[in-house]
Image 1 (spheres, rainbow over the protein chains, first blue to last red):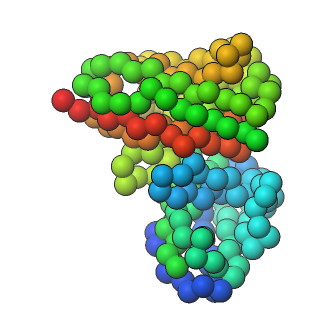
Image 2: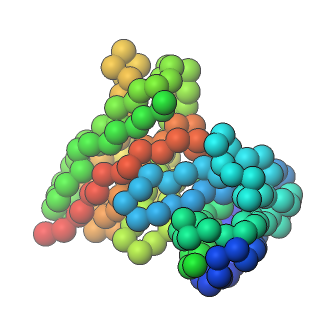
Length: 106
Length: 116
């Protein structure tokens, strides 16, 4: 099973600042990497797929990069609505696995 | 607009069974693989199971293999998860999702609590 490790566990940032979230895979997953945003009581939302492709309707301030084992989600110019937990997921191998999440506090 | 609405969650005793349903709308259900993902209280997301668009191929996490069964009824645009031999560590919010790589739409989830 591929282990996905996210860091940091919690990130406190001010509105308008940039947030950089990391996700590391225990072995290469090529570009089969997605990022999701999860808020309490809401359906999780797909942000990024294929490591760097924004999903439909996702603002340009969300961007993804990386390949292989190292990935980054960048949220530029943070807004209060971006407070959430962010998860990465690899879909290169079964079983599908998620990272433990990064909580972004604004 | 894609909508996924889960139902069937609730309180069940250890060793009991429960059947979750997910009503899908806003897309051609029969064309897409579907998944279940869960989130235990205070924990991260955990993939549970995926079924192919035809229903012929299924995948399960080791933790639920032999206890859970995923199925679909494309005539009713509905996804199911039959859960048996439930354990306390199955307690979670269960989400229905469209696709698996990635899951591009999610439902709001249904809470399953396994406790005596």
